[in-house]
Image (cartoon, rainbow, N blue to C red; front, side, top):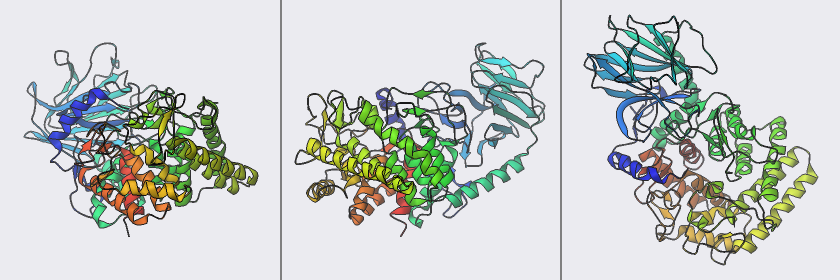
Length: 591
C-alpha cells in the first residue's frame, strides 16, 4: 500500500484543502440523513453497494465533475471510473455546484437540479428537472454493448452496468467525438437508472418512486445511527460522519467476499485488507454483533490449507504475496469483551485461529528459533517502517507480541469450549514465546527488529513499531514496561498534539508524509492505548485517545495524519480511522 508515485499529487491536493474543514454537519444533534460532506474527500455511496460517486479522478485530482466508480475490484488499482457525469445543454456542459448528504447528491445549475440517489444498492438514479445529462465513458467496442431492441438502454459489458432511461422523453445519443452518451430531455424531466448486476441482466420495470426511496433510506440511516456507539457531545459531529463512512463502505456478499464486509474506503483503497478489517469488527461489536462477526470472518473464509490468510480480498481478487500481522486473536478478545459470542461462534473460529497461529511458527520461522519472521514490509502492516530497514527476513518483538496475545486469547476460548489441556498448552506457549522475545529483542533500551540471519538492526530507526509490545504490557517485566512508558511520555519523542508519530520527529528518518515513517496512524494508537490502559496507565491512555479523537474531529478520517500539523494524508475517508475514532471516543472519552 506504499505508493511513492502518489505522494506529490496527494500533497498538492491536501495543501489546497488544509484550511477547509473535512466535513460540515448541518447542526448538532441532527439526524444522520441530514449531515453534509465534501465529495472531494468522502464518496457518496450506500450500504451494500459496489458503486460510488466522487469528484476525485483516479489520480486523486478534484475535477469538480461527478465520477461514477466501480468498486467490485474487477480493475483493482487501475482506473475504476466508469463514467464522468455532468449537466448538459446546447452541446456543452453546464456549471454546477454539488451538495452531498447520505440520502442524495444534488447539483444546482441555472437550468435546474441534477439529483443522484440510490433506489437500492444495485440501482443508482440520475434525475434531472431541467438540464440534460452527459455521461462520458469509453465507447470503444471492447466494453460497450447496446442491448438490441431497446433504444433507451445501454449495457456496459466490462463493468456489468446497465443504463436505462426510466422516464422522460429523451434517449441516449452517442457522441464519439466526446466519447460518451448524452441525453437531452424534451419535456424538462429525466430519470436515468444505472444498475449494476452480477452475471447477466434482463429489462425490468423500475417502479420505486423517489419519495419511497428516500423514506426507506431515512429509516435505514436512523437505525444505523441508533446502532452506532455513543460519544460525548464534543465528538458528536465526528460520530455522525464516522457512522456514515462505515455504513456506506459496507458491501454485499459477492464472489470472494462471502459475507457483508466493510471496505477500507470507497475512494481508491476499495479492498478488505486482513488486518484493517479487525478495527472495523471491533467498532461494530458493541451494538451490531452479527455484522461485527462477519467483518472478522470474511477473511477467515478464505484461509488456505497452510493456515495463511490472504493479504486482501475483493469480489474478483485475492492477493497471497503478502500476509498481515496476526492481530486477530486480540480482535477476538475485544469482541468477547464487548458482546456475547455464542459457543457456535467460538467453535467456528477456534480451529481457524489455531491454524493461523501455527502458520507463523511452521512457515515463517526459517531459523527455527521460535520467533516468526516477516518476508516483506507489507507483511508487518508497516510497509516501509524504519525498523524494517534491513534485509529480510526480519524478526521482531511486534510480531511476537501479536502471537503471544493471540495464544492468550486461544487459551481463553479453549476454556470456554471445555478444552482445558489445550488452554494450558497455549498459556505455556505464550510464556515461552514471551521469554524468547525479551531475550532476543530487548537491547536494554528498547525492543528491536533484526535480520533473522545476520542479527543486523537499523540503528537509525526510531520507529513506534518498537513500542507495539505495550499491547502485552501487563505481561512484561515491570522494568521493561516502565522504560517503554517513560519513552512514550518523553516530550518530543513520539507524542505530539495529534497522537503518536509512527517515527519519532527527532529521527533522521522522519518524514511528514512518509507513510509509516512519521504520520499518525489509527492502528498503533488503538493497540498501544489498549495496552497502556491494561497496564494501569489509564490517564495516559485517555490523553492519547483525546489527542487522536480531536485530530479526527477537526480533520476527518484520513488514512493517516501529519504528526506535527494534524493535516489529513492519503485516502481521505478510511474506515479503520473512523472505526478507531468511534472505539476511542466511546470507550475512553464518553465519561
